[in-house]
Image 1 (cartoon, rainbow, N blue to C red):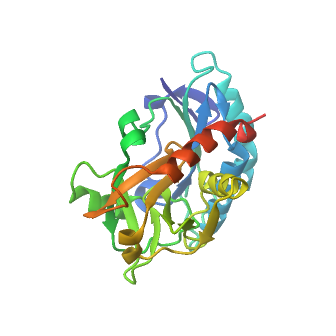
Image 2 (image 1 turned 60 degrees about the vertical axis):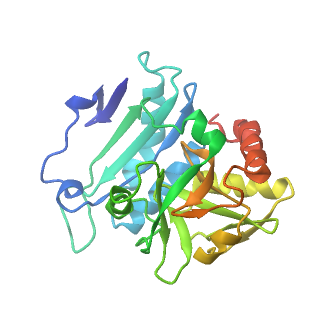
Image 3 (image 1 turned 180 degrees about the vertical axis):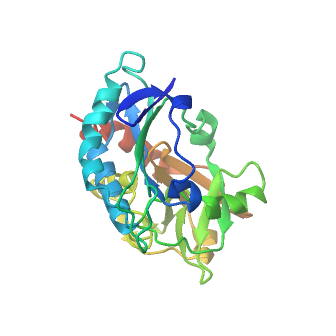
Length: 281
């Protein structure tokens, strides 16, 4: 079941359409969020909407009034009988609308997708880990969660179909983030992950860092280098749908023993155990 809120009403997705004049279509101007829903309850919704507000501000989209409406719209949607109690995601999108005023967008449109057809990692991927495809470019404007993922998809189209997503590595060899996830390297007893500003402020990333520090892990916020992949004991990505997902290979480089290790397995357990702390009240 997929429904959408657009133009003041809830309707099936095929009935919700943007005009061809919208700058999301014409120029790729748009921001969005993905909020995980467990049994009808949002996970860390306030943090996601705060990040969406920052993304729209950074993109020049004047969306303050829209952001203020979203919590009520999301809760109203989740209370609808056709999706009540469902397991899925809510995705609010805010587009550039039709007017480009020298890089600002004063008349944005928005819609909210309620989708239970999410592409969750399989049990095999959670158990055995996944592979990432190196993408040797720097992602522009990392603090903006833009709808434009083209530069993350391009290397995947040329790689093995078994690779889960791409991993941004700057031309100088700094690892920043995956296409739609934050990346962590485990080396010499430390968790190493790129700092906010070099990467998007991941909601799950922040939660995992909090839980890791509470449970005795040392977290170092810097960009790991590509050559450190060969020295790593473990690696993983974090994300709204992925939660904590082991990485066992980047390109042709095996990570550690080539299978999920004790650190990521412990963090998976700690994350699931502490999820109620961030469920919407």
